Amino acid sequence: MPVRPRVEIFCDGACLGNPGPGGWAYLLRSRARGGYAEKEGSGGQQETTNNRMELTAAIRGLEALTRPCSVELFSDSQYVVKGLREWMAAWSRAGWRKADRSPVLNVDLWQDLERLSAIHSVAPHWVRGHSGHPENERVDRLARARAEELL
Image 1 (cartoon, one colour):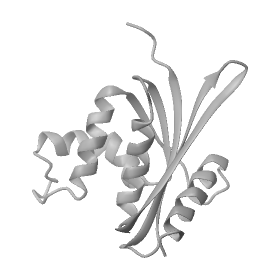
Image 2: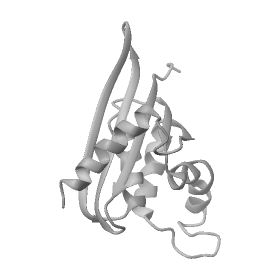
Image 3: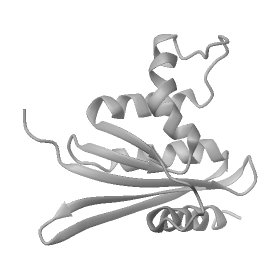
């Protein structure tokens, strides 16, 4: 089996109001000859929630990969990180219902993440937001800018 390229994805979502106009952003980083290669992506949605933007940022980052990769995914969203680490597999087995049998919120996005996680090996990591983490601050600025463009 070929060795998968190692990639870091830093992702963040923002929402001005909840719901309200929102933005998402990601930064991909991989080793390249003599250093690192980076790619950014961002976008927005008029009427959304913060959780949807956090999930969308992770999805768009994974979708930007052109082949199966070993991914270190960094997010300041406990919702995204715990969802990937702990909840998603159980929700899927239970027909996308939570332990109390209520439907999982944002199921369309969680199913996208499940599909992408079957392609890539994804290791989620939580980083504290607004704590000076350079890559997290970078994607936060991009996501907020996309949301502000929709005001």
